[in-house]
Amino acid sequence: MPVKGRWAAGIRPRNFTWVLRDRLAVSERPGGFAPNHRRVRRQEEIIWLRVQGFDRVISLLPSPHNLHAYDEGELAWAHYPLVVGADPRQVLEDCYRDVAESLAAGKRVLMHHEELGDRVMGVVAGFLVWSGRIPSAPQAVAAVEQMVGRQMGPAGRELVVAVVGPSPRSAG
Image (cartoon, rainbow, N blue to C red; front, side):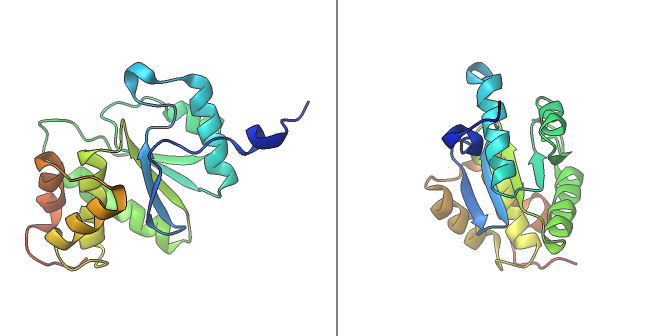
Protein backbone atom coordinates (compact mmCIF):
# COMPACT_ATOMS: atom_id res chain seq x y z
CA MET A 1 0.00 0.00 0.00
CA PRO A 2 1.58 3.35 -1.01
CA VAL A 3 2.24 6.00 1.59
CA LYS A 4 -0.20 8.91 1.34
CA GLY A 5 -0.61 12.40 2.67
CA ARG A 6 2.01 14.36 4.49
CA TRP A 7 3.96 11.21 5.43
CA ALA A 8 4.74 10.61 1.76
CA ALA A 9 6.71 13.85 1.79
CA GLY A 10 8.70 12.91 4.91
CA ILE A 11 9.69 15.40 7.58
CA ARG A 12 12.21 18.24 7.49
CA PRO A 13 15.45 17.57 9.45
CA ARG A 14 15.76 19.55 12.67
CA ASN A 15 17.49 22.92 12.44
CA PHE A 16 17.47 22.72 8.64
CA THR A 17 18.97 25.94 7.24
CA TRP A 18 19.83 27.02 3.71
CA VAL A 19 23.37 28.38 3.32
CA LEU A 20 23.09 28.84 -0.45
CA ARG A 21 19.37 28.91 -1.31
CA ASP A 22 18.23 25.72 -3.06
CA ARG A 23 21.82 24.46 -3.33
CA LEU A 24 23.59 23.95 0.01
CA ALA A 25 21.92 23.38 3.38
CA VAL A 26 22.93 22.32 6.88
CA SER A 27 21.05 20.51 9.62
CA GLU A 28 21.34 18.22 12.59
CA ARG A 29 21.99 14.56 11.70
CA PRO A 30 18.88 13.00 10.12
CA GLY A 31 17.16 11.06 12.89
CA GLY A 32 18.55 13.26 15.65
CA PHE A 33 21.73 13.25 17.66
CA ALA A 34 23.02 10.25 19.62
CA PRO A 35 20.79 9.83 22.71
CA ASN A 36 17.69 11.08 20.86
CA HIS A 37 18.32 9.30 17.55
CA ARG A 38 15.30 7.51 16.13
CA ARG A 39 15.45 5.17 13.13
CA VAL A 40 11.89 6.00 11.96
CA ARG A 41 12.57 9.72 12.16
CA ARG A 42 15.81 9.20 10.20
CA GLN A 43 13.87 7.40 7.46
CA GLU A 44 11.23 10.15 7.34
CA GLU A 45 13.89 12.84 7.11
CA ILE A 46 15.72 10.99 4.32
CA ILE A 47 12.41 10.74 2.44
CA TRP A 48 12.00 14.51 2.87
CA LEU A 49 15.51 15.11 1.51
CA ARG A 50 14.78 13.00 -1.57
CA VAL A 51 11.38 14.66 -2.14
CA GLN A 52 13.10 18.07 -1.88
CA GLY A 53 15.58 17.06 -4.58
CA PHE A 54 18.74 16.60 -2.51
CA ASP A 55 21.38 14.67 -4.43
CA ARG A 56 24.13 14.37 -1.82
CA VAL A 57 24.61 14.23 1.94
CA ILE A 58 27.91 15.22 3.54
CA SER A 59 28.46 13.75 7.00
CA LEU A 60 31.01 15.39 9.30
CA LEU A 61 30.47 12.85 12.11
CA PRO A 62 33.68 11.36 13.51
CA SER A 63 32.20 7.86 12.98
CA PRO A 64 30.37 6.26 10.02
CA HIS A 65 26.98 6.22 11.81
CA ASN A 66 23.94 6.37 9.48
CA LEU A 67 25.85 6.12 6.21
CA HIS A 68 24.08 2.84 5.38
CA ALA A 69 20.75 4.67 5.73
CA TYR A 70 21.69 6.99 2.88
CA ASP A 71 22.40 3.97 0.68
CA GLU A 72 19.02 2.49 1.65
CA GLY A 73 17.39 5.87 0.92
CA GLU A 74 19.16 6.09 -2.45
CA LEU A 75 21.04 9.26 -1.55
CA ALA A 76 24.67 9.72 -2.53
CA TRP A 77 26.86 10.58 0.44
CA ALA A 78 30.38 11.44 1.49
CA HIS A 79 31.99 11.18 4.91
CA TYR A 80 34.53 13.74 6.09
CA PRO A 81 35.09 12.85 9.74
CA LEU A 82 35.94 15.73 12.05
CA VAL A 83 37.78 14.01 14.88
CA VAL A 84 38.39 16.06 18.01
CA GLY A 85 42.11 16.61 18.54
CA ALA A 86 43.11 15.71 14.95
CA ASP A 87 44.36 18.24 12.41
CA PRO A 88 41.28 19.03 10.27
CA ARG A 89 43.06 20.68 7.33
CA GLN A 90 43.17 17.75 4.89
CA VAL A 91 39.63 16.63 5.75
CA LEU A 92 38.38 20.19 5.19
CA GLU A 93 40.24 20.59 1.88
CA ASP A 94 38.74 17.31 0.62
CA CYS A 95 35.28 18.29 1.87
CA TYR A 96 35.45 21.76 0.29
CA ARG A 97 36.52 20.30 -3.07
CA ASP A 98 33.66 17.79 -2.92
CA VAL A 99 31.07 20.45 -2.09
CA ALA A 100 32.39 22.79 -4.81
CA GLU A 101 32.32 19.99 -7.42
CA SER A 102 28.83 18.92 -6.35
CA LEU A 103 27.49 22.47 -6.55
CA ALA A 104 29.18 23.03 -9.93
CA ALA A 105 27.43 19.86 -11.17
CA GLY A 106 24.08 21.33 -10.11
CA LYS A 107 23.61 19.01 -7.14
CA ARG A 108 21.65 19.94 -4.04
CA VAL A 109 23.77 19.18 -0.94
CA LEU A 110 22.98 18.74 2.77
CA MET A 111 25.86 18.90 5.29
CA HIS A 112 25.41 17.68 8.86
CA HIS A 113 27.01 16.74 12.14
CA GLU A 114 25.30 15.43 15.30
CA GLU A 115 23.71 18.82 15.89
CA LEU A 116 23.74 22.12 14.07
CA GLY A 117 26.47 23.65 16.19
CA ASP A 118 29.97 25.06 16.02
CA ARG A 119 31.45 22.28 13.89
CA VAL A 120 28.98 22.53 11.00
CA MET A 121 28.90 26.32 11.28
CA GLY A 122 32.70 26.50 11.15
CA VAL A 123 32.98 24.14 8.20
CA VAL A 124 30.36 25.93 6.14
CA ALA A 125 31.78 29.39 6.97
CA GLY A 126 35.23 28.14 5.94
CA PHE A 127 33.77 26.83 2.69
CA LEU A 128 32.20 30.22 1.94
CA VAL A 129 35.63 31.87 2.24
CA TRP A 130 37.55 29.05 0.53
CA SER A 131 35.17 29.14 -2.46
CA GLY A 132 35.44 32.93 -2.77
CA ARG A 133 31.75 33.53 -1.99
CA ILE A 134 32.63 35.65 1.06
CA PRO A 135 35.95 37.54 1.18
CA SER A 136 37.04 37.01 4.80
CA ALA A 137 36.70 34.68 7.76
CA PRO A 138 35.09 37.32 10.05
CA GLN A 139 32.48 38.13 7.39
CA ALA A 140 31.73 34.43 6.85
CA VAL A 141 31.37 33.84 10.59
CA ALA A 142 28.92 36.75 10.86
CA ALA A 143 26.93 35.55 7.85
CA VAL A 144 26.64 31.98 9.14
CA GLU A 145 25.72 33.19 12.63
CA GLN A 146 22.92 35.23 11.10
CA MET A 147 21.69 32.29 8.97
CA VAL A 148 21.68 29.84 11.87
CA GLY A 149 20.53 32.31 14.51
CA ARG A 150 23.24 31.62 17.06
CA GLN A 151 26.81 32.62 17.80
CA MET A 152 29.72 30.47 16.73
CA GLY A 153 32.06 29.43 19.52
CA PRO A 154 35.84 28.96 19.47
CA ALA A 155 35.68 25.40 18.06
CA GLY A 156 33.80 26.63 14.99
CA ARG A 157 36.01 29.69 14.53
CA GLU A 158 39.11 27.47 14.60
CA LEU A 159 37.65 25.38 11.77
CA VAL A 160 36.95 28.50 9.69
CA VAL A 161 40.60 29.53 9.71
CA ALA A 162 42.10 26.01 9.60
CA VAL A 163 42.28 26.09 5.79
CA VAL A 164 41.60 29.69 4.78
CA GLY A 165 43.52 31.51 7.52
CA PRO A 166 42.30 34.68 9.24
CA SER A 167 42.90 36.94 6.22
CA PRO A 168 41.01 37.08 2.91
CA ARG A 169 41.75 34.28 0.46
CA SER A 170 40.05 32.89 -2.61
CA ALA A 171 40.03 29.31 -3.82
CA GLY A 172 43.14 28.41 -5.74
